[in-house]
Length: 307
Image 1 (cartoon, helix red, strand yellow):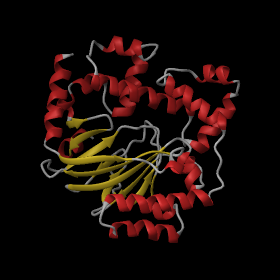
Image 2 (cartoon, rainbow, N blue to C red; image 1 turned 90 degrees about the vertical axis):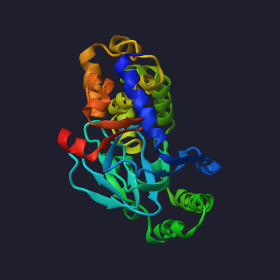
Image 3 (cartoon, rainbow, N blue to C red; image 1 turned 60 degrees about the vertical axis):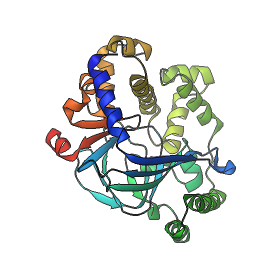
């Protein structure tokens, strides 16, 4: 492994050991499995880090976040226009409009990650309406349902909260008239099996469908273009590879993940992380104090200086 990357990731692991954290993945109700990846409950104490903010790595998915306790503050890609939320939905974030978030010292979250098309099917609306947006949940569900979600805070255990949430989502699903096409599922399957290393022309040829059909389906079910979704999926696999495997140099990474040249790779890398590959290798020198599969964490003072 590159010496700088080895030192940086080792320091990152030391930092995460200081988190007083408990994260638990709960199974999804069987009737909701076609639409939701998982329920992730996290209780984390960040008090040892003074004034920090995180930049999430885009996943291509819509997520719903329920905060039990204090609100979370979200900023735009320029770390401006702060807004506070408790129950909200984060639409698919495009590569050039990633937001930052700042959380109080103690976190108690329930994160619901929707499969492509899953949010639309349950909430009966196009995913495109939420692209690059963070929307208060009260704007997406009828008042009666919102009241039930707010009442989750009155329940003592996370198991009880999830059971009640399942009931709410199943009721929303029953009311929904939204349909997801078979073609859409097949296209997603091709993208994920290839780890994002596939062209739209090849997908059209493999499935015998038109580019227009794919683009229209992605607009309503995923919220972004298929080309951008492919870029995000490919980068997710690159990022995971860099965190988990021996680093042999950028040319090996570029070749493994099907980039034509170094300039395209650097452009995608910076679009997702805000940093060049070289800066990533030495991430502690560029204001970051921790990174993992889903986020880059900065001390607030370093972030403001960098921006």
